[in-house]
Image 1 (tube, rainbow over the protein chains, first blue to last red):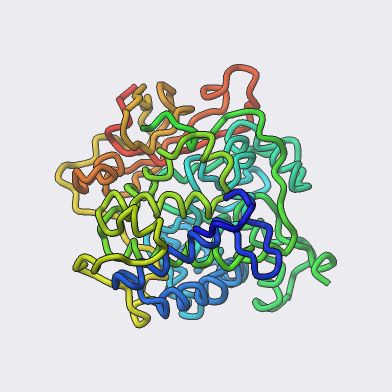
Image 2 (image 1 turned 90 degrees about the vertical axis):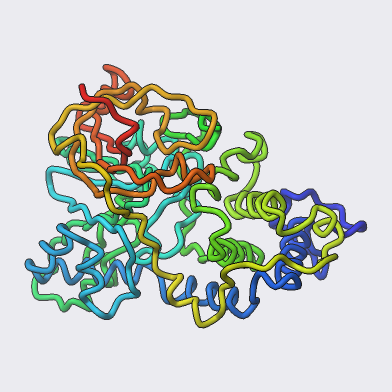
Amino acid sequence: MAADHTHSSGDHAHDHGSELSDLQLRVRALETILTEKGYVDPAALDQIIEASETRIGPHNGARIVARAWVDPDFKQRLLADATEAANSLGFVSPVGSHLIAVENTPQTHHMVVCTLCSCYPWEVLGLPPVWYKSAPYRSRAVIDPKGVLADFGVALPPDSEIRIWDSTAETRFMVLPMRPPGTDGMSEDDLAKLVTRDSMVGTGLAKTPDAAT
Amino acid sequence: MSNTIHDMGGMHGFGPVEAEPNEPVFHEPWESRVMAMQRAMGYTKLWTIDGGRASLETLPPLTYLAASYYQRWFLGLERRVVTHGLVGADELAAGHSLRPGRQLNRKLMPSDVPATMVRGNYERPAATPARFKTGDPVRARNISPTTHTRLPRYARGKLGTVEAIRGCHVYPDTAAIGAGDDPQWLYTVVFAARELWGDAADPSVKVSIEAFEPYLDPA
């Protein structure tokens, strides 16, 4: 650790010129040690980061949802075994075990949380956003889901039921949002542009064509 | 320890959920290095995914709450490489290696990365038939183990219904403490919000957990 810095270890947002925070220095030191000892290959780390920023992400989930909206047979496969259905497409990043898709309907709205940590279907949605991993979401999703939805600006019809999925095992959940009105005849590619990350977590709805332009 | 700060479901007082528009995948480069180191060291199979979670859950509560997500990951990883004898505390203090590394069974090479971007499979052959079937009423056990568990506090002792059988999976409670896979049947168990939170809860809300068979009794 540097002797000349003045930041606390929690002060990671600061980066004045060449001065590195205590945390940054510790992270760098750990990577140096793990590399020198032959435990990690920095080139492999680079590739993991690159894949996390590009290959995985909600663009995969959006393609899956758009296909389910236009292809009833695919939708049935998706709801029966989402891992198998997603991998059958051939154009999304490979999905491992054990992905489960749950379908939003006018009667039931699904929302996914991990109250214990940060479990998230990252192959199809990417790495989880900060709010998903935060104490406010993890604490309130199971006891006050309508309040959480209000934080996201989502109001459901008063008679709809809410179902929360707490990801407490190695199963992973993605929400199949409802197809928005006014999208008849749209192409699968254009439909995919309406599918937001939040709509696949259940903290949002798919965009309408007006909102997407 | 299971009754620790990580088990947040149902707590009050953390305030509103604040989503960041157009949030980047990483906010700082060090976060990406921590994430990648975590994955690369996980690849060595020196510890299980549950052992990794346990190392975060046993951080002191004030540390856990004050740290950002990737800070927690870093603190957990730093602790794990020391407790597994891979790195010495003197080396962390020095900021570089002071002695040769241990021989590992596996090291993540760049060519292996695409395969690691697909989640592993935690299903295992079942030694016995599933005890419960879809539709069965079940009561989550009231347990407070001093080691890792995935049964959240808010569900303990509560009456629910088996909605689905998800196969037989690695049991986190044993895997976390180096006691083996001990595969167990996994169920989606759904609870009414009123069962979990009392009569004032919203009757239109249901909550499910993924529950391993040892978490459940017939009801």
